[in-house]
Image (cartoon, rainbow, N blue to C red; front, side):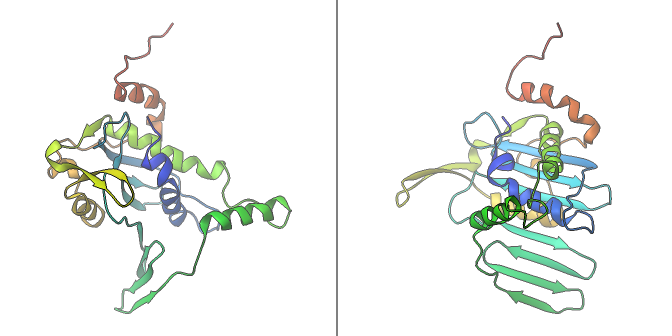
Length: 235
């Protein structure tokens, strides 16, 4: 149920956002104060394949992100950080852009980076005693797990994307079948730039509830309801 593009394929991108919003020390990931989310599916699966999530930190920083596996063609992973003096935008593997508030714009291409290889090398340095700690520990991942859990609790259900928006495509070159949602790129852009939730703008559902870490004990019952299972009966 929770093995999704959020909890698996794009997990490191969400964790990166928590790193950006962490404290002034290097190894710091932001804690979560509140979450609101809408979960959807276009595939015939048990879990969600599309997430729209807004999270607030105790320090007053707002994070918005949208993730989907219901798309075809070239994919894009982009991160935007709004700072006091500039806006940083990183299109993964393509371009780094810094837009200063005084009008200056700096653009550069990222250096070649093999994340899988570098993570292995970093961990080997830790095992050899050359680094005091690995890049990420299990404790560092707790805020990410909390966001994922709270997104499910906030949404309360996984809404099927209206069939009129969904097409199935065959990529003959790769010999793969794809499910694609019409207008999903525009929906993501509107959510990220303007905070417009797709449920209220064409996808036919109410917005998710605002939830906090105090709601985490409800996760099990929410997941059972999402899976169409009856509530647990105390024995």
